[in-house]
Image (cartoon, rainbow, N blue to C red; front, side):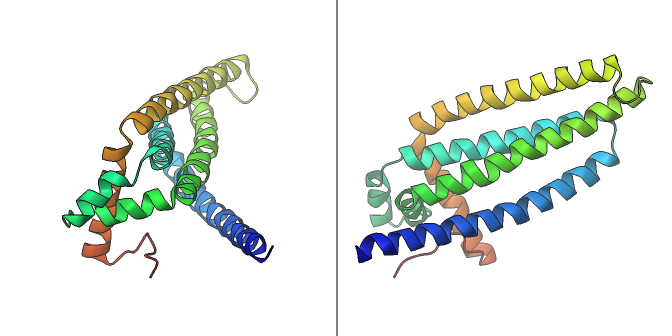
Length: 195
């Protein structure tokens, strides 16, 4: 009973911290993307939207890879002191939290921001074509833009899931090396090592 209550408290704390992180990151990404998009042409804006979509797809793939990866190959690497292997083990051991951050926080924020950014691009393109708000042309542009973004998002996530499942070891090893590099060069600790 005490153990389940402890797990419940940890789960609640994690959920609240994820919600706060999501709120802060969403606000930052929204302000940055809106300010960048407001000063560029619609073509550049469209490519920025695709970059935001790609970020969501990429992090979704990382989350899937973390849940699909096994610890065993990384233990062999860690025994040989391979750079990034210990970090890869930590990712796999905390796959639920890592996947939650990648898929839910970054992935969902990217989805929301790409939708907002798409709206700004639609408004810019409609004004370039000389059509105001609510016109048939703007509605057609909005439908096309939404369809393109949805197709790239869903298609990209499907490909990302395939790669995440079938190449989980190499993907998580790459992430482990990147995290180890940040720790070594810049003293940025993204993973907590339990004593």
